[in-house]
Image (tube, rainbow, N blue to C red; front, side, top):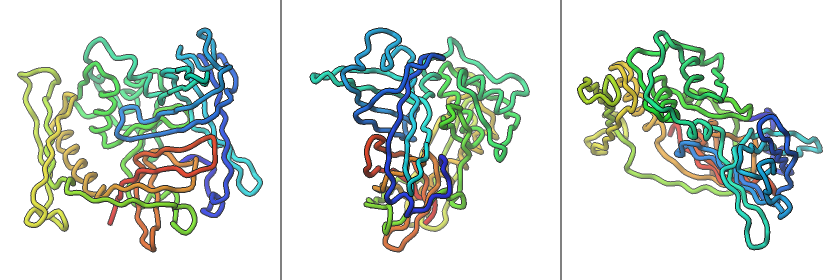
Length: 349
């Protein structure tokens, strides 16, 4: 969760929200852009989770590569300005790389920008690679993510990588596989650095919201898709058909997922990277645990809280029932006071 920390629900109930959008190309500041509307969206199911959409007046029609809204390497640095009890706080959202712009019939300019992981997607390698002998998580992540800087928290620390890892040409796939091997995910935070995010438990609640103050709507759902058996396999060397196959299955017969009553719901996943047996086993166990912690998904509509970010663990209280959930996506209006939709995954019953 982004600062300012320590705000209570009642503080956010009457918050006033504004936005500042500044365009830069390289080190050159192209100035603040006046926007008509702007929305920030994030979705953990997307390779590049963040999307920024905005509309600007006709005078911002790009005319050359140095125009603020041209799609020539321009990055939009976005901040929400929130007023709480007469005091203005600035909430930084980080930078977004312009992907496209389009002029509509009225002359307004619509712009679409992606999070900075797009810079990794845009520059695949020409050949497959492997971590150097003795490489650590930080060293290999930095090699894969260049030019994004990589940050590891003190809580997570740096560790030596297991032997046998190898990657294809797609650097974002390689980062994802590295995260799988080390039981973590990646998130570009508002300092424009790539952060390693460990899987969190329900003990790591960053904020609480209730239907008496901030929650405006709740849409529950359930399904029979949660697996009680996960099989993971991968070759010792990627793209080598003669390489040995390592396979591990993790399963459970406890509680609501007891196959005598629930049946068997299995998934099979291939690790793209060349990998070792210990990594395959670890990934299978983690995927089963994660899937069953994520016992339910639902959406909430709430008063806009610009501090919220992907993978935050929050609690929501609806009709007297408190659920601890992880944020897996949201759609946040930046230019007006209004509600935001938040997609969450329940971590515990």
